[in-house]
Image (cartoon, rainbow, N blue to C red; front, side, top):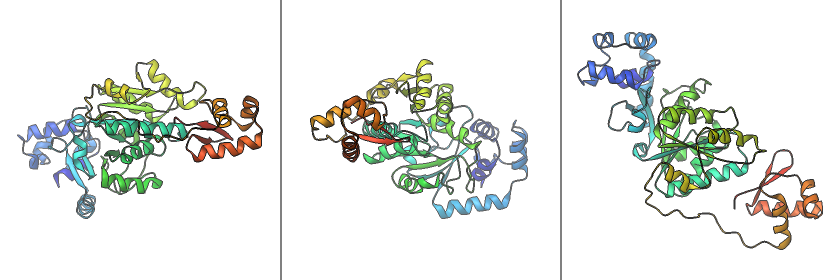
Length: 356
């Protein structure tokens, strides 16, 4: 009951829990007693909740914990992740479903645009897979786009991944990632500081972002607009004394601007997994290997078309002008290249080359 009370206390942090434990001479079971609470400087809302707790809500929380198999980790407990415990304003408690030991492993946060390009998603997946093989656990926020690609990239090579939610663990958001969340619960771990029945609310996601960065040795951004939640996560990482990395992109791609801004401000430029591993001084125990599947050699015309496409999205009309091939031939060839995973369609009738 003590942990459930603290987890539901508004604006309560690990810093407050530390002082409460000290006032109770280390006896965690006593830290919610009125005389202990009265001696500690707490946020008014937290003090009021501890004085008059919502017993029906707490009862429902405890029942959900029992039925779901989730755990509640209080700040200061042995299983509470130490990198997160070390930051200012860490959550007072964490709800956890899955392999709790994954929270103790060295982690790298990977975040980026929700409306990511096919190339951005491919890069995130490839980097996540390579970094997982090198011994890191990939941590992200279960959002669509770069987050989901990062989680899937780690899982694809048999690695573990941590998903930090901005809702209660019984409210998967976005719903389209429900199946992915179930897989992460089985092969990794789901984490939230928000009690069950907490739905998606805009103000909760910046709080979630500080947990993503706080769990990790560093944060890697793959595609981000100039104003995005990914940049908030990167800022939190800097405030927490963690490393920040960014993948550069085309100067014509709006989703490159956030990454380019980070690089201008001192983030480490990433061209491959080795840049991240050296940046966090991680003694990786596995050799970095290229996990991509080799495609068979292309005919001369296909090579000509890929050369004409370059690495910036283009329309069929542009490719006709660059290559001299007919529009009908190019449309057919683009279909074959898409099926082989060499290119991907973009909105607006554009096609872009993937990093294979």
